[in-house]
Length: 366
Image (tube, rainbow, N blue to C red; front, top):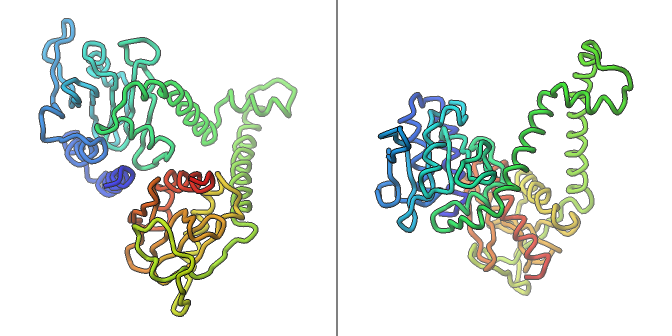
């Protein structure tokens, strides 16, 4: 099973079951153990890989336990402390994790409630776990940019040196993104003063703050909306939709190329609004790496192909929308196409990274 698909399946499970989970133990069984097994790649039933209720004496603290220790190559690599789904995550409520990090060989500490996963290292001071996570994954609001870094934490790909090299930047960029998100959602006094100071030269008394706070909030929202609209206009402007035929006999999802000289039969091909909408989503994603005008769609009876330069030998992605279960066909570096299921059109976004990578490969001529 593809890594991203596994993450998506656990996310769907959290969304479905979260309202009915009432205890920490239920959270472990429903969300955390499946995540350890399917996403991180450890055998949850093998005590040589996953140690539940891991115990180590810490100074005067005897017999304290941490929920899980993940073992690779005979050494504890990751410590996990769990809370009930929905519970707030703070190190003040995770003292065992903080103490155990200093007395074991583990370089990764994890605090999770099954939905949100906070990953910690010792970036600021060796053998002392940082107070801020370097990586945060919210399964109900997945940031695609964190998935490649999360993959480095899986058992097959575990590389602590590579993780450490990128952890500091991840930590601060992630924290800044979250801080910006909070400011955009509910501007703080300092943020209001910072922006309003560019247009108002007087003193910021209480009544002035009250005046500018809704203005700053409205301005930020309008700015973000304008950026989104500009991006969509760029992505969907010229040559918005080009629909043509793809040679039949090229419907093998494992085929990396299409024979351009094969004969085509256009009868019976119907391009739906849903296929066009899916194409536009792919185009909006891919145009971060190439000019929008280079991305076109060509239709066939079995699938729609989104192509670079209107070239059958440059497929970015395939859309299999002709049955009740929809699939997105993504390509790897070997030109192999893998069909991945989606529930609706928004599901295309979870494969943004693969779409961008394939676009870059095609644009560079690999």
